[in-house]
Image (cartoon, rainbow, N blue to C red; front, side, top):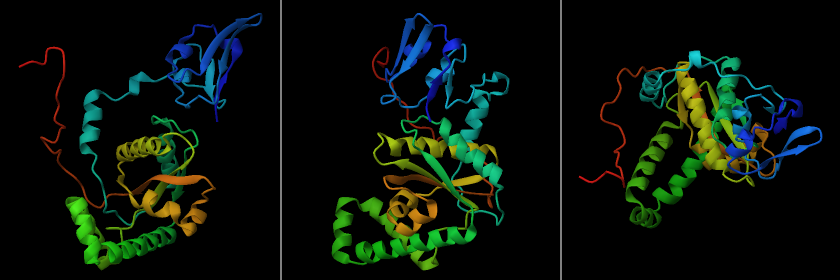
Length: 285
């Protein structure tokens, strides 16, 4: 996967060179015209050069770029409504999601800010496999619960380091152990975002990709929940690595459960905006 340049379309305007924040592009003029040279070792695959070119002389992996259709772009009010409506959904109806929709949701992660073009997604929509993933997670939780929360000496130490976090974890783990499951209800599918451990900012890139998927799922009237157990539990489990086809040097950097919501959130929560402060300039009282 890489940026491709069609030399016969390039006019040498230099927009791609100026916008490249990794400075991996160079525009040179020779007897045959303008040529864009790319240092692929520096390229972060952000693809801004493809998006900015007025002649569509650059493409991603040979796929022709498409001009934005600004007529269907949502308004600021519509985006605000979507963001305020988005909630974590943990209760799902017992209904599958068709694979074409799952593929669309997973693929949209590729348009998130990224420094990792090795990212890829794996979708699990087999209910038996999802239940097996649940059992694997539950075994890990049981082990951690026995070691950390039932051992008074270790628990007291953890409490002294981070009392609020460990109180929450203990409550969550107790509940899972009691119910015998880590899910409030079984999701229709789980999307795993997988990256290369040697790639700079792979984990951070995956979080952007997952959030793109969450918003797109919301727009398609589906519920989602970030599955923290993905990176924490599954990457080191040989059974899961085999199931998902992870190669040597790959890790799970994000995971998202999806389903048709069984509950309906009806109201935007007023007053939840982040506190905002200004510094410098005319910020004096």
